[in-house]
Length: 374
Image (cartoon, rainbow, N blue to C red; front, side, top):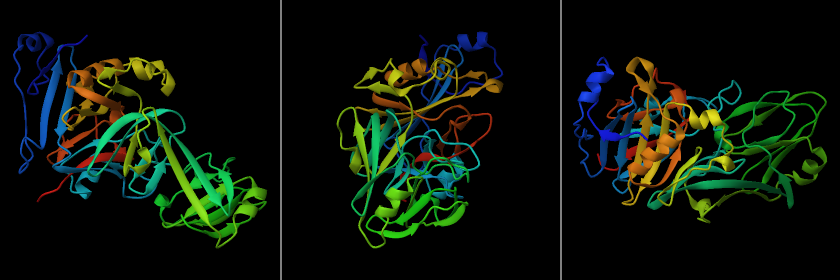
């Protein structure tokens, strides 16, 4: 097991022998002016085997913590620094895993809720953090059940914001986060345009691909089940969308304004989680050294944002998931969650990244700390 100490960042040109001689470390706490040390604190932790871990501790009662998605286009990606600066954030960390292809570029691979907007849902039990302004955050494994009722007919939702490829074989629900754009709907699929309150328009199936609108204010449901959707999608009849979130602890996640997914759950009830089987993670993902990002909750209500770098130029070797869990335990986390990692790992503070990745990658979403006082 690695031994952790809090230290100022040492020059990377020194050899491991000199590093081992520097056994007495001191705390490096850098404050974000004009914030006090009671609001945010930055420390850098160095291990004897070459792991550098950056930690921000944030008081949510004196700041505003929000989840955001890249704003350049939907779907789309931005760097953490770009998102932080556009929202006036004083600190931030990368969010959950995202899809990286031409049709879903930047869209979450798991659950993501930003206020009333659903970007992604949980297709299997996976860990997530949920919170609302003024309501304590919680971290747990969750699942979602998504239901649409159109004109009294319950229709199945297999996917949320799926790939926009014209040859898609399965339908799905597109939420308003796409903005105003056009969807190339595959042959033999029908579509229904609706709001949270009523059905607006029916698009019958065709032998040829169709171009239909996606709206920044409406939902669009497409499906190969043309008979069902034809009966259900009657303009001016009632429509209801419900995304129910079920957690292990039974907490009321449906009321949270923000939900950000990750994997796996690292700490639960102050104990290290050692079985990741339910979250279906590969052995390589768990046991290999990677750059890692995590978020944790302390007993005093503070949040910790944590990034372990992997950058061979700086001799940073990264961490395994069990090592990350032990580190979060040492920080005193009662709950903790692994976020996206690798080159996506980023920790923003005082107008720049404070960790040192190979380069700053564009990502899909982030968790930001907004000052509540000028």
